[in-house]
Image 1 (cartoon, one colour):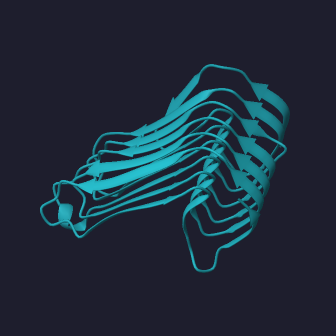
Image 2: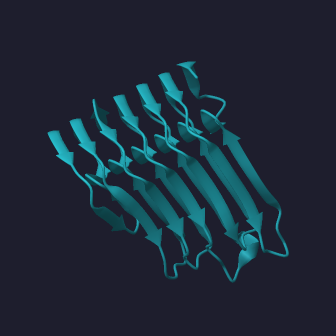
Length: 219
């Protein structure tokens, strides 16, 4: 367990998953804060999926985060040569499958992709950016975000998607008692001659949702 701790200023950068306090949380974080700038960039060449994840407090969360906040700017980018790429950026966490309660984020968030593939017929690119979390399939309650959010994809992928939300980029879980006030923008474009889809999902609160997701008492 990590509790009663704060990280002031500075910069944290990494590859797969970067967070000011924790890269990947599987335990419990409570009464914690960070004002650190965080960035994640996946570069190089890979045959498989290339992922970059960045969060103001934790890169990804599979555990519990309570009574915590982050104020630093967050960015996740992907410039890898690969067949499938994804970037997740969130003011508090980049990717959440756990529990987040009584927490907030105020920093600006950006998710950017220029990944390419020599075999673009099977190449898919996904960008996720949220003021609090880029992606959520867990449970979030009593939360808010105020930062500016941007998700941009300019790859040569056949299928390109951008998900940007003031609170969460893509929600497949539960959001309860929440709000977001930051500006949100996103774009998706492809240089591929065989492009099939390039869509942007932009929302003041959530960029996109799943049919089984739930949002209550939020604005």
